[in-house]
Image (cartoon, rainbow, N blue to C red; front, side, top):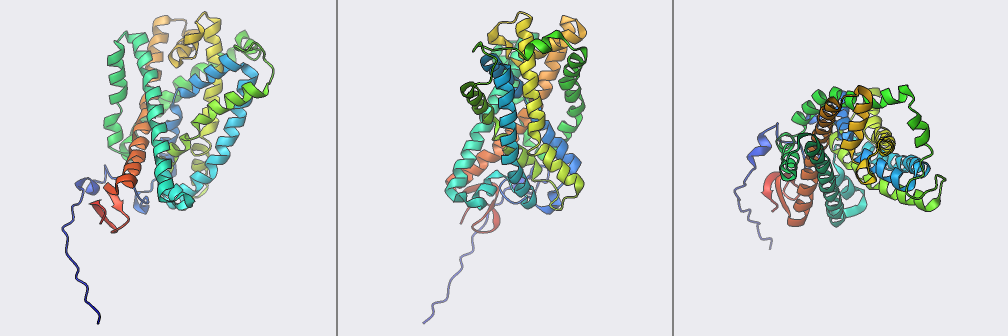
Length: 366
């Protein structure tokens, strides 16, 4: 005898934020086709995520430690590895409109595996957020002489209102700040290169702490391992590139390649710039402990251009704040998605997310 099933109606609680298209960014599910944006807009937003000054700091540190030759060889090797690893990740994520969490779950990591990868990625965004905020704080202390605690509070909290409003507001911020960042980032470097300072030739012979400028396997491997700590950056690029149109023309492929795995082209150029600027700071009398700080590097770069200490300090502050607002907005946005993915897997609770069990927008799974 077949017993009829009884279906109990349950009142469902929906998150009201889901209905707000300004706040809804498809954080825990497939990015809807209607949410896809133009290639230029997405690429411009993803490019802004490459503004982080940790590149210059790392470039300066490995050069001062391992010398020019080992540092440059490590930059080339790490850049090639990161490009090859990032290419299939970005291609799959943009094709299917999913972030790294869903990508790893569908690629064979499974439910537990995607939980672990989300935790690793979320931790990376927190660490990078802290590093970039400390760089901004150091610049404000150096130029404005603010108390360190106040500078840290400003650096940490300034990006939250922008990141909370999602991809639409972040895209506008990246668009408006992009010209200023590009001019201040590459302007002084191009000027120094055009002048042909004798420091450039001496930089290529810099031995570092090791005292030897030749290529050696151990220093090369250590420098490469440090640079590969930037490998999870591809996850932040994917968080933006998933909004690319699924059907890509030439413009879509260019956006994918240049701001997806191609972020390493800009990134490696910035690392090499940090290498030179750290050496320039050493030559100008800065102690080795502070020579690898981005604020110190660019203060000397602007000083070489304008020969005005006050103007150089002001431009340094504007440049550092612009860079850190751009990257820490991304860190806060990507980190919030990663932590949401992690806790949704861990607790089976999906705030503002898609419930895979009951196929509805709900606070909790059935």
